[in-house]
Length: 160
Image 1 (tube, rainbow, N blue to C red):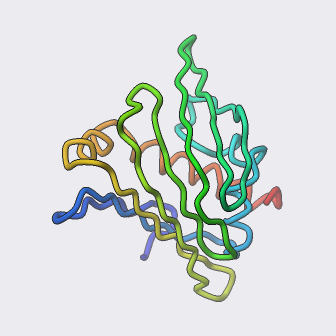
Image 2 (cartoon, helix red, strand yellow):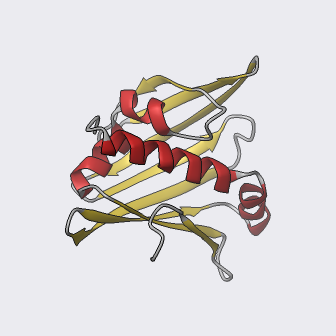
């Protein structure tokens, strides 16, 4: 990837999966921490205009999580379970509480590229092609790219 600051977001044509690839100036350990420490997650996740507040966050294999997005007087809830957290991989579920029957299985792997760079490979398997396409048209690319830009800033200032 030539421009590491922009996520590559792709829809799989054969299964309802979204693939995200993004390079970071970080180690895999830093990225796992950034995705599992609720104080850090609250600082970078989502679009710039939104506020994410962890409700509970038990970041361990078998743990669960919930956060609330409180923006412009609206409150949106999201929750899931951590199925696996290891040195270079996180597997979790993700549910938007406004659509409780639509649960995504997300897998993130962190590939050490050496020289202080790590490639994030993420995939989200959703329940249907319609669900996948709704995610893609929801503005998720803005949230992913703005969130990861905020994570870049946390990495650069030594917060992670």
